[in-house]
Each structure stands twice: as C-alpha cells, then as structure tokens.
Image 1 (cartoon, rainbow, N blue to C red):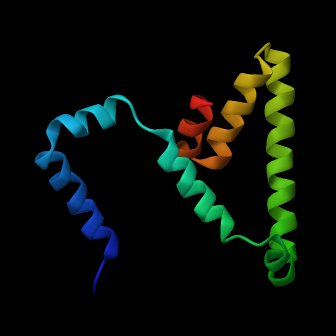
Image 2 (tube, one colour; image 1 turned 45 degrees about the vertical axis):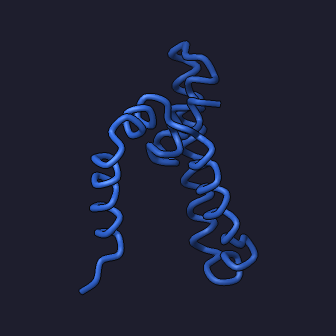
Length: 107
C-alpha cells in the first residue's frame, strides 16, 4: 500500500541534510507565513452550509461542547486570577491542537 505521507517524512530529513545551515535557520526562526497559508487553504475548503445540510446534529454537538469548554475555562481561570489572554491561549491549545497554538502565540 502506498503511503503518500511517508514520502514527505523521508524528504524532510534529506532536505535538512542537504542544506544544514538553511535547516538550522528555519528551526531557529520559523516563518509563520506558510502555516497561515496552510490554515487558510484548509479553511477555504470548508462550508458551513454543507455541514449544516449533512450533519446538523454533529455541528450542534460540537458547538455545545466547545461553548461549555470555553465557559468552564474562562470561569475557573478568572476565579484563579489568570489573565484573559492566557485563558484564551490555553483554550485554543486544547481545542485547536498544538500547531494552531504556535501560530496564536506569534500573533
């Protein structure tokens, strides 16, 4: 079975070995532009109307789940004395996964 992700996994280390200085600079100073382009491209394929037409119950479940998460995070966090910015970043890290969090921290 062909695994297209496997080719990329092998190509990245090979590229790093071919140009070690450039790879070191990329690790030290990651460019957020490419990640933003990636998120925009992935988001452009989404359609809220298609989701509501196909699986409205799933959409509502996700909406309730994320709303409850945000309410608990903000409520407990404010009682504990955390700043709103820190609470929103923590919520983003839990809901959006680590790659979204790295972009949120750079903004």
